[in-house]
Image (cartoon, rainbow, N blue to C red; front, side, top):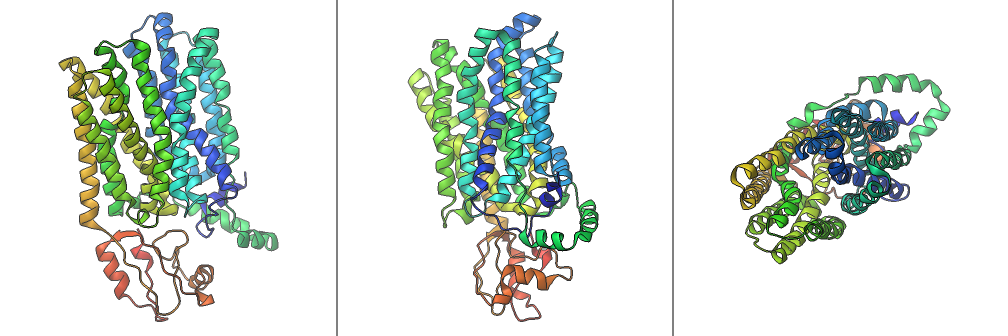
Length: 499
């Protein structure tokens, strides 16, 4: 488990954008699929559970709700564990928890046991896998990161198309208890995915450790001083805007997939015909995510990916508003096609935009805090829509509400970024060049007496002229960046201007 220390200090290691990163991407694909599809896949067992424990559908629906709440709400806990122990050991333990929860559920004697085992234990296990996998993906990919995020996000619809039919087959042949037991064994593959998350190692540091092993205690002291949860991300205007917009978006984003099947049944369609709508949605979503990842990686689009994300949310919200007027099955099919496209775009871009805003160093803390905020919205959104449906008995109302919420989030994100965040102009340094391989906004990572070593790593001493990448920064900080000359005559940013 010696990789934990390396996990924390990867700032000086350039993302390989390939190599072992493709294995990391494969693991992230599987983990994303389990995390998002599993709460929906277990719903195929709800009918048997209602008969077994003599409860209503609202009682069994809490299983999926608790799973999602654990996946989102334990974000800060996952951030602390990753920053303390590293991604690989956290994911290995998470895989054991995910499997153990389903195995214990197969011996449940009442619905409360299901809540605690499937909901809490399995939900926690999936959370301990989902967040670290995204962190590792961010560390292994830089130039190809939008594509990697799109491919990883495609794991959700693929897993949903596989797990739901599998659950039905297992229930038919082995009952819900046997199905839960087998699904528990399948979730052990999370441990395999965790084993793929090999920490990035700086070759220079490995040589230093081989020649001078007395440095290890000092590294342990530095690791102990590291922040387990970095709340300084809230000082970043871009992060605050993203968090507020994402929280509003989640209020309505998951409502249509939850209610579209019931909507189709309400219009008089058969059960199998109505369930086909989700298959159509998932199939379109499957191809939309990697395609959007390719688009987001284009040179002109990538510095402005936050606006592409805003467009995706606006597209999704307008689709809800128009889909609320559906009166027959063909119109619902068209709605699911367009919803699948927009939903896939949102899924492919949401974490890519967050990675761009906060950078690699603070992403482990940022994603935990964002997921916590979204957890509140997840618990409020679909249940509130259900209560509104009970009061109005009109599906059009809840689709309109969901669409308005998602459109509002798009307006907030685009407007606030346009007013407060600008794209930094490309500046050619006059003296020693400053490059930005890790997308840390052309800033020094420490600035505490080790400038010579950092400049050597950045290629400044080689006299190479490198144009820094365009990044999203505050307008006032850009002016300060341009006005502050350094002692050596070059124009470089001070550590205080980092986002």
